[in-house]
Length: 441
Ligand SMILES: C[S@@+](CC[C@H](N)C(=O)[O-])C[C@H]1O[C@@H](n2cnc3c(N)ncnc32)[C@H](O)[C@@H]1O
Ligand code: SF4
Ligand code: SF4
Image (cartoon, rainbow, N blue to C red; front, side, top):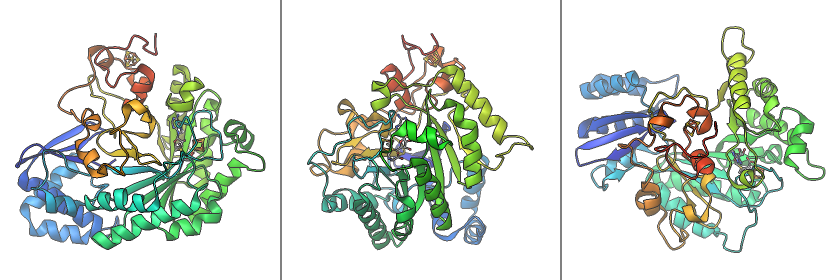
């Protein structure tokens, strides 16, 4: 996960790793070196060849000290922004967050499947859909100008509106190259429908990573759960899609949303993901947002514990059958009193098909809008830096977990490190007070 930067004064900066809870104070010269190091890594280095960085560190003592510190503290060096843009504007920013978000863009709400847990409650596009021109002028160009590098194209199902999805990817790519001479990172979230048919075109438009949504390693269970419609085999679409994506050299992952009906299938999903050689598998306990809330789809504590053990057994230890596979599951050991932070307000925001901005994909609710207006009439970058709705999540100096929840060893099950999960379960954005409907009671 990347780190974000806050400016606290002209000479004081903070680097924050929201998921892992790290916070580091940097002075003016140190933050410049941090950005320089990041810039060299982004532009001139690969995992195999770090020569350019070594040359720089040898020529600059302070940079070398800063780098040693970054490595010893495990501060992320994979920015979701173009470091040079931040460096060039370091003294122009107001106080507050200065790094741009990763933009999660809902291409359209239309979808051809009917997952009963989908966080989107209503999949109709009204006639207020953003035009291609608005997307370019009101979102893509402004976000690139503040250094945004990483984009996620989601929906709905982006392949249902394939032409629009391709056009957006093309525009992001062209504008980024034009403005900075560098390539963006674009990830596609898809149910896999027609992916193998379009794979080459996606790749040509610089989509470099694909997350496939698959709910089961068994064909019949997958189809029964997601109701892809007559003559569509949602399982085969994903399997063939992953194979095509791998052939094209794209990064691939599977997201398995786990609820009561597929909780027993996690072990075989790990084996399948391992056989398919995806880069990682995300096992996501269903968040009670959108349709999951209406349909009361929820993962119980016993199943959560069982899944934690299954993942450990299959991926850890010498004899584990999926040793090399990265599996993400929110079962991290949370230290006592650790604040509950995540990407919310720090790393990304969610732009709906109509240009309305929400703090995250699991918080698509009218009352939680970052601004009541669409980006047709307000500035998308101003919303990111200044919206009070986002600023409320950036009080990183104040702990948002009280003593009771702070010492509870089930917090990881209950909310993980996900503020949206907390909101959807308890109707509150913090755990300062133990919720009356605590899941374990
Ligand atoms: C809404 S979908 C849109 C893209 C595409 N149609 C798909 O299914 O991947 C984006 C991602 O959200 C995940 N998702 C949907 N509803 C969810 C929920 N209630 N809890 C957790 N993840 C959810 C899906 O698994 C999918 O990976
Ligand atoms: S999760 Fe994706 S595939 Fe399923 S209904 Fe929602 S948008 Fe469609
Ligand atoms: S709400 Fe209950 S289960 Fe969740 S962290 Fe607090 S005490 Fe633990």
